[in-house]
Image (cartoon, rainbow, N blue to C red; front, top):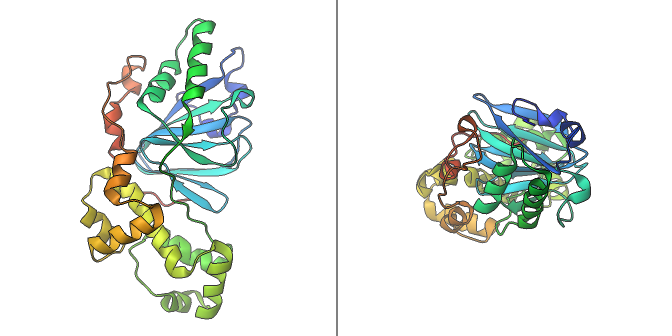
Length: 293
């Protein structure tokens, strides 16, 4: 059963597997222009993976950028929004709730190794004996595990004026206006806005902006841009200042982060149709930016 061309955000696994006994189903999403999926949830679990371009996911007040070599596990019933950059291409695998792996809690990053990718592609849109499918599905569930490098979380404030500032900085992390300047624009006092950011994000305004810049950098680094260029694009005048800030937020250097989220080149899956496959090595070439939604 092919799910290509269907908007899986509007369909539950129970509908997709009507007449089958499949426990995992995968769909490919590709669009030449930016695309956004409004808040929705599923009766089944969802894994977003195999990103080519930039894909961001919002669950509650948390924004996550899905790195090329990792996936985002979204448990059944968790509301989420998805935004994809122009030219983005990614897969979603829906997993029946009764057979989900032992991943507890809310949405989280999971390691999508080359082997797991191949198994998911093997299962995609392929007719096979039920016993073979069940064995492949079981292997895929066993391979799912938590990623070593977690996504950078970015809570948004609920206060309308604070959220207006936050969204502007997500759209342009290099904007270096001070909090006083922002307050003058939105009609608030610095004291009040400082309290709002602390109360609603758990961070000072300055610290929140650092997280916003680092989150933007995690999407730019896989594009192959030099560290100095990434630093400038997210608002740092010197690479050293950027590296220091990146380390404070992620616990590693930009180079170490890039190595952790880069999948080594492997062959194109022989199980994927020619018009649906691309070299796994190419998935690291991000080709656009997207504002988290």
